Amino acid sequence: MAPDPLALFDSGPQTLIQDDQGGVVYRPGWLDAAQAQRWFERLRDQIPWQHQRRMMYEREVDVPRLMAHYRHDDPALHPILKVALRSVEQASGVAFTSLGLNYYRDGQDSVAPHHDRLEDLMPGYPIVLLSLGATRTMRISRQQPPRHRIDIDLQAGSLLTMSYASQLQYLHGIPKQSAALLPRISIAFRVRPRAPASPSPPLPRPTAP
Image (tube, rainbow, N blue to C red):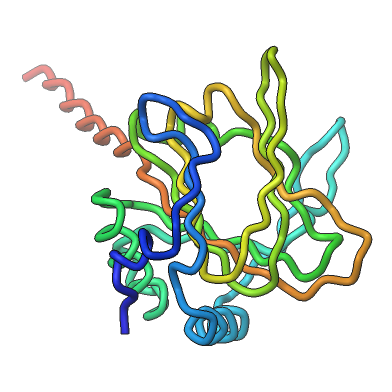
């Protein structure tokens, strides 16, 4: 059963950052605990998680988490992701085209401070993060003076909405933690730019008679 979008407001949204595009807003309790746990367990066990490597400081390193990515119209989209997509779209009024999943297996899995690649986002549209599983701390920090930092505990069943404008001013990340932590899954809903149309192939040159 899809969550009631009105429950977002019953749980008390918290505005962490203000800007003219909606800022950064945290909404705990969007999913009840039992449903969030069911979604976590099924996605943990049924998503074909990928282990990736990336270049960093001139050497190839492991990405410290598992990942998966789907387009909104992907035939392989998991049924839970279909329900989550419809529900988040209804709550936000945005038609998202991309779902990015991260699986943090323990406290050592992390993501470094970053902003989303602006060329991969449609200007003016937000990013929405749904958290499942164990609570993890997200660190949000301003890139330019006056610098300040916000640490927010992302609970299971919560939504975090980040405006496009916030990506211009702030970095966000999930730092490593030395404490033993249970796994967490995040689902990021984004609007990607449309791929440019493929150019028409050149017409063959006429041959001489």
